[in-house]
Image (cartoon, rainbow, N blue to C red; front, top):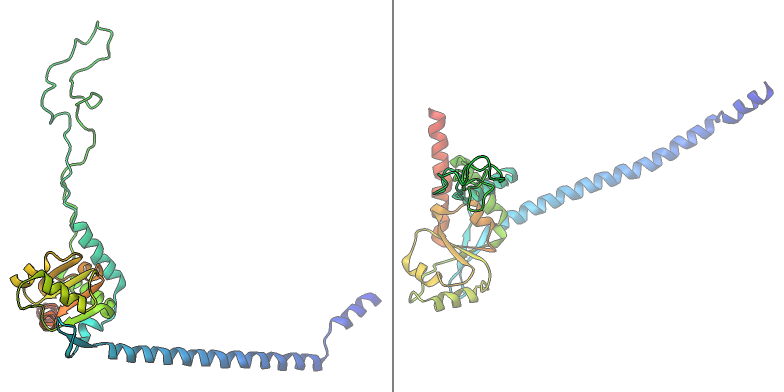
Length: 275
């Protein structure tokens, strides 16, 4: 009994000690709360500065093919400053890639190969294995078992989703957008256009020229330049935007891009709501 009482006395903490422990805990928690508030404030300020720089990044300098600055232009925020929908963008890229597969691989089965109509030898009495045709899959020159056949592997994506994916792609690649006043040269010569791209520091890079409409002179001048592709605004899609190093747009392409990809989608949505 005496030993039990002694143990009880040693485990019981005085009231003064408990108060000291509580005060120490408060002192430890207070700096932690202050640090958390400061970190939250810093993150908010950082986000605000990012948004500010985002707004400033919508202003682009317009160059000519000699590399000189000829003005500035404001990129449409609904195209280049929208919220990026990452799952939709990945879905659009997968659909585009699947639609490039033609699905034309084909093989012939035993019934499609010419010949093999006569039984090679009689059923019994030869000592050989039974055979009914020389076009059996186990014979050389025979048919293919479970081989590929032509099939449609294409996928479909609604037009509004395609446009939304394109906007997400353009917003993602906004830092790689270059605006050029015009791609026309004095003569439709590859040498002149290549020199212009070199002055814009685009030589040797994977470039996508976006034209408001196809121009035969520009096409003649650009088709022999390595790693350069061209497209008109109507045919622009998320895959082309993502799989390029620099996106070079003609100044007139911005207006066309807003008209084709934004206003049309709003009209479709308006008609759908009225119906």
